[in-house]
Image (cartoon, rainbow over all chains, first blue to last red; front, side, top):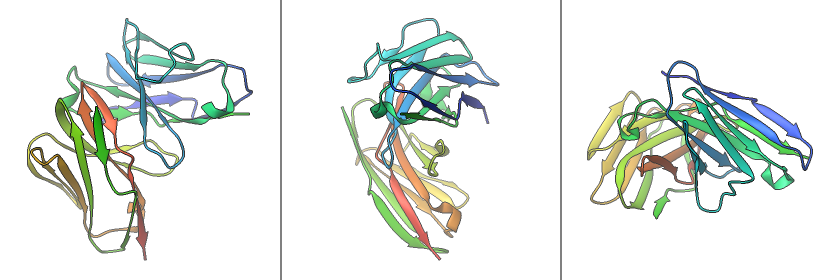
Length: 118
Length: 108
């Protein structure tokens, strides 16, 4: 199947600093990538949809100025958590769809990034 | 909006069969996924249903009834490695929206 690589796998940062997470589709072009956040023992919550060459679409309640998304190429999307606070500590997962219509195939997930803000 | 409901936890015995149910209420339904997720890892694709009926894939089967807003994942010949969370997710507006997941515990 298609491969999505997420980097880093885990990161620890100090409160108030910014952290960038990368999501790459390694063997296909992804016009759209999705960013999710998952707190312990909870499900994946969709944060935003990242579209190549255009602004990301954020879900209700997600601060776009705090979670900056850039989808500069067909194989790379980045999520930057700005001015991180301990409550931002979570598991962040990206996924990418290979075909224009999501209903035709599954989305492929990165391995996730465990962010801990101290 | 959308509501996706599934049991929080279930327990089953190694070698047995377990059925995990999922009900959903959403407009613009375009398909339903089941994913498996082990703790600390990304979800792994299990199945995709867009038409009514049963899809069988090895030990796992998934069923969908669109008129009832209902799906289930059936796991046969349970193995210890099947201990994981199972996530029901629907496609809405070309996005995948997840339910809260069911944590399945397998007893020897």
